Image (cartoon, rainbow, N blue to C red):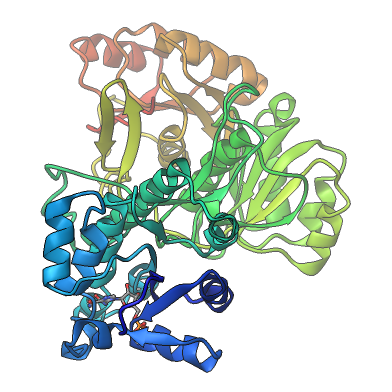
Length: 515
Ligand SMILES: NC(=O)c1ncn([C@@H]2O[C@H](COP(=O)(O)O)[C@@H](O)[C@H]2O)c1NC=O
């Protein structure tokens, strides 16, 4: 490379969208372009004069590309302080030129490991080392070096370069973005390599998310909010395809997630689950052979609350169901897919958003922010053996039908905010009490919603009953069997009350609080 007074731009990018135009702009503004092999070839093919990094460093790219830009002539050029006499002297001594602009984005690690069968070798080959090193160096020295990691920034930065000044404020914004980019990248690598079974509570933890939607506001109109996807995730509600309807709000996502979590839990070969959610709690839920029946039974769980609800189906939605839903205001409908006719019917709804959600696994970790930090836990997954561990504690054991409903109610209870009570009959939720500061009120609420349907129903409670009163009240309204964890100091008096009232009761030995 010849000595010149021109500024230098180092371009080394895996994602080369828009790069040729940006490079042309740089050349127009008297920048010399330096690039790594693949990037240089693409720019040259577009008629741009490029100096290869290897020409600048005097060292070839080596080890199959593992070492390209890791050289003092690159990192000195990125890190040297223009105003520091010592730096200037050393740079001159070693023939290092200042680098003024860097464009870099990284090997596609996240895309590579999205393939569940990826080999460790392929995953490791796609960990970019030189890119993050130069991005970090440029970002550290951002008062002197402009670092661009996102093609969406070419336009704005290009305009400033043309005008002759990239402001310090903009340089700092770009540097923050660059460090975030590398941090998210490293997070994806770490979570891929980490064996969650062995390190369930690592000493340090980060999560990498990318913005997928910007709702107009958060929970309330004065709260700004963004919707983020976990890097590499393709399933789940935030990545769902919106097939119809107006923009999703923050709370639409929140409730849709609650509904989809229940539908996923109750998905069963040859059966259809339908769920109605209001304020993140399932107020209707049923499993049936035919979807239309599941829908009707789910809606009947709480016909009043179903108005304006969020509805999820475990299976592809058919036109009979879509037809049956006419006339009821619904905010969101979620299903893994839709028959053409069903979609055509749903598209006549003005206020309903329709989401097609890809199958996904439940999240590996749950995170909740609290003052000063976060709570991180394993999700409350149902243990496959939990049903086998049901222990009958009363004189009367549940009948076969009651047993099926007890298991159904117990599974549903996990998705209802504590203190949670679920009344169920014939694999349908008939009453629900959520989020009450005492259990008896939840029982009262569930019975009030169930009305006559409480007669012959079973009841699930997410945690033990501290006193017999809730069971006594349940018996009064016609409940026949109860499932609860047990474990209260008053278990004996609760069991005595159940025996006196002819109620069958099982203990699970495990509680499912959900706050
Ligand atoms: N090894 C290095 O010194 C190195 N320097 C830059 N890279 C990456 O190589 C890619 C560009 O390479 P190319 O222009 O040859 O296609 C960029 O994604 C860049 O982040 C490197 N590759 C991996 O670490």
